Image (cartoon, helix red, strand yellow):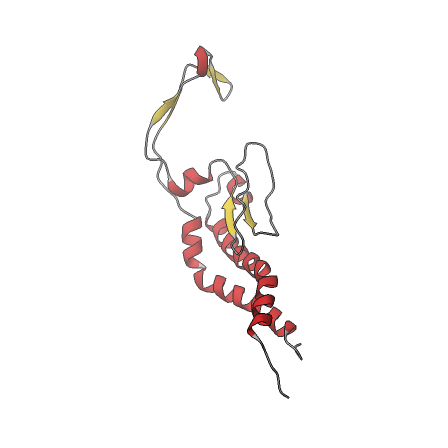
Length: 157
């Protein structure tokens, strides 16, 4: 059997199925990041999402961060909880939040003239998850593309 395979056909199959492969790789990173995320109330773990050009698992909720849409041929793995960045990278400064225009500031049902906040140590979970899944992420991406290439080849499965 003589099989001729041209590079243009190969690139077209990769272009068509690249989004699916990136999404599969993102699922592996997200699962590891959710496992590593600190869980007091569970909201941080539930806020994780994967987004590619054509597909997303983002769920919009009040006060949560907006979805970051990735450019073409990339994937975004993120957490939409409003405190996710503080846990991942910590806070290096202390300070106070004062009310605007001399109004009282409501904190947990109590009215105060200001609210203070302090430093917090970083407890990274997304960065270490990416490092830990570097090999399996690439293997999953390759497996999805291999499956699509074999199905798209003349005389394929």
